[in-house]
Length: 186
Image 1 (cartoon, rainbow, N blue to C red):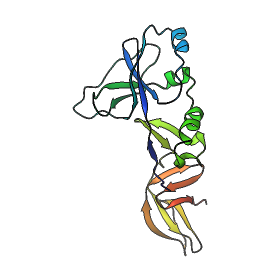
Image 2 (cartoon, one colour):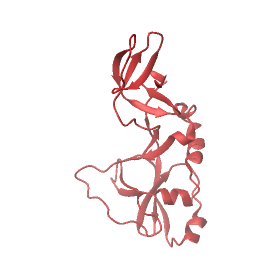
Image 3 (spheres, rainbow, N blue to C red):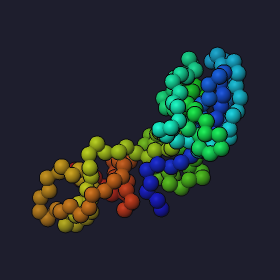
Image 4 (tube, rainbow, N blue to C red):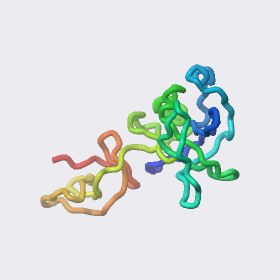
C-alpha cells in the first residue's frame, strides 16, 4: 500500500461562455443547473485529462467567469497545453462535493478507501490527503513504540529521535512512507 499524500485524478475541461474550467472526470455535469445560474454557452473541450500548475514559461490567465471566480489556474498536460481555471464555486453549484468526489474515485483507488472524506481536498489538479504539519516532524522511539512528534518537542529518556519524516496529518494520525503512526501527545 502506498502512503502518497497526492493522487493524480483525471479532469474534464468545460468551456462556460468564453472561459475554460476543469471539473473531476466521470461525475455527471448538470447543464440545466449551469443554464439556470446564467451560463449561456456550454461545451466540452477535453475529456479525461490531467492538469497541473503552469510553468514559468506559460502566460497565466487573469480573469474568470463572473459567476465562478478561479481558485487556481492550471495547465492541461499533453497535446494542447491549455491554460484553464479551477473553481470551488463551480463544483459547489454542480453538487460535486468532496463526498461525491470521494465516492466516485474510491471505487477505483484503494489509497483513499480508509480515509475520511473530510480529510480530502483538491489542489494543483490533485486529490490531497490530510494536512501538512506546520513544522518538521520526527519519528521517535519511546522505548515501547514508534510515534511521530514535532522536531521541537522535548524528549525525555528513553525517548530518542530516529529519523526526520515527511507526511501528512490525517484523522489525528500521521501518514507517511512507513505507514500510519500515532502522534505523540503530552
